[in-house]
Length: 222
Image 1 (cartoon, rainbow, N blue to C red):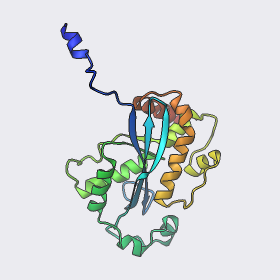
Image 2 (cartoon, one colour):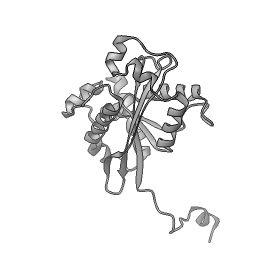
Image 3 (cartoon, rainbow, N blue to C red):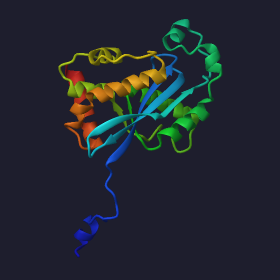
């Protein structure tokens, strides 16, 4: 056997990856600036992708939700009206470090997705650094993908931007808009609606990243 054959051979006992666990994330915050806002809640729901059958399934039993006690209680009535997390609920939340430790344990090495993921990634990453979680001085190591950019990439004829606009396009309703857990399920439903077009062009996570990049280009040039 040549060296090349030895280096490139595949052991028959090593199964090929056909299933992947992705996690869709949503946050509630004290504001819209990811470099200044406080993190008030995180919710997440897992989806399972079967690359053999090209099927994506929402897994409601594999979900996560936590309220976080902020350093400074948010008293702004306008902000509270948006997410419904009042002062008492804020005070009853978990400490930032405990909440993020639980979240990190929940997601594991899963790929992460969110609608306007840049915001969730920046906000959670900053708070992970603030909490000084071991080995995460630069934030979460997980890869993020923006669901909105996937929508743009595979539905170029639709001129929608916000989550509400995409939900309207697909006839999706949300039981409690701006409640992290409810929003996360709505984002999962949007992902399911666009999945047939994604699956027709994808065989791996690398293809998902390629589609997101196309969506970013289209969004910039539309």
